[in-house]
Amino acid sequence: MRKISLSALTLVAVLSVGGAAQADCCSDVWSCLGAVATLGASCQMQSLIESITTLKTAVESMSSNLSAQAASLMTQAQQGVNSAAADLKQVRLDAGNDLKNSADQSRAIAHAPPPTTTMMKPGTAVAKQNVPAAVAAAPQPVAGSMVMKGAVAAPPKPADAAAVKDAFNRADVMVQGLFTQSTNPQNQVNQAADQAVQAAVRHLNTARQISTDAMLTPLKMLADSLLDLLTHPERLFDPTAQINADITRISQQMPAMFDRISNEVTQEALADLNQGTAALTQIQDSAASAHGVVEAMQKLNAERTQANLDALNVLLPRSGMVMVSPTPGAPPAPPTQMLALSPSITLAHKQRIGLALDRANPQKLPIVVQQHAAAAGLASKWQSIRLQMKTPVAVAPASQQKVDKDLAGMYAGKKGAEIQKKKEELFVEAQKRFGKDPKTLAKVKAYIEAHTPKG
Image (cartoon, rainbow, N blue to C red):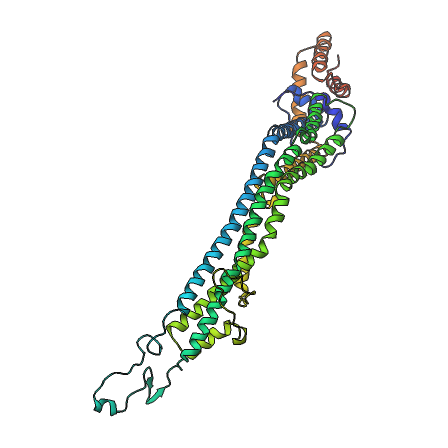
């Protein structure tokens, strides 16, 4: 057993007590004697000192790497801003590329030469050919029709070629307008991302000032309080109030300090990034709208039916709203209407932006999460120690029997002056072991006196 000073028992004497624990620390003659004489207080003190030593080690460990953790947090915060800015730029680039592809495809379809025949499904185009007169005179099935139980199903109604051309032109104007009008929002996103990166750099010096030695003061005060408790447990005051105040202060101030550092680096940067999200959403929605129009154009181009023409027209401005296709060097066209996108598409757009912004969320930076957990763990350890203080250890009956047997053995075969001499020797040893705590020493001597044979 590790030797401890039982003079610390006065500390326990001033603490409230609750239910008793079910084990003691009786391992040799004097530890058993101390446990029995103090009704288990010595065992409780040994457990408390071990727990406080563990807590002190944890505090010292936190203190030793706090500056390094603060420096790492600043790096994490800056990297988070850089990653968020890069992610938003990538979203912009992807949407911009989609818009460009849609613009190229719509232009190709709108400016393709008209087909020589009416296009239906592949293989169903009808063209005049030279055929024998007898064959030409015979009744012929309608091209593309299906015979079902003697009935002939009507083929899809072909679309008017002029109407198709007009729809393609209007669709191309709409897609080209969406593409042209995306230039300014794309520049806004780039500008917001660049400003965010620059803001993070500007705030690094202020963050470094926050993470100075001043932030170590609460931990140093706690470490000194714990050291005082371990060095002078016999003091006639209750040090737990001061330690409790230190623990409370640290569990609040330390996470708040790391929050300040991370917020200092990211706050302005996040504001800049958020300013670009509206423009980024516009680009995403424009790309989705253009993609939807081009899909309808491709379907009509493959099968020139009235149904496909109607489906495309639904997506386009009315004929009276047809805009002139912008020409190189001309000013941007007025804002072009976009399609009513499905909730799943708009949600996906928001989610991708949200994931990017989360990279710079100060509350989700690994070191911030770690420090919040460390502060909570420190408070939890101290509460456990306070519970130990209120729960003294019960002395097992076997320990009482062992002490009585050991004392009886020390006096065995002795009479008269020999008994008195042995008692004095035990008093001297008790003085060495428990001299720092007069109350404990008095209890141990009284116990020895009570178990010294008469005569």
